[in-house]
Length: 115
Image (tube, rainbow, N blue to C red; front, side, top):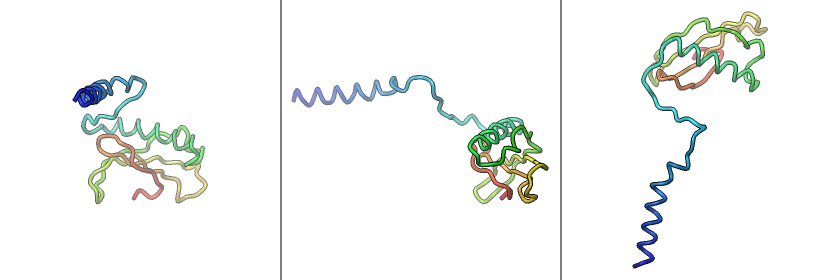
């Protein structure tokens, strides 16, 4: 019986103290509702910088500002679409970069088709 009580006490303590081990230096994304057009543009600008640094898009996309941002409804529901135009891109089919976000600001994807 004593061993069971010790085991229960240890389990209880581990559940109570577990959140303390998380510490600081990281964040959890808690949805605070829909983001504005301006926030969508800001987040997309940061994402383009990240895509360039990872080699996913050409370096010519660095410093390009969003041309426009709008909400569009797809099969799974509405999303933010942020467009970037880059006339310096050699491939005409890849002169417009589209970034997609949930309405609450979570990055979903990027492509050159807008679909």
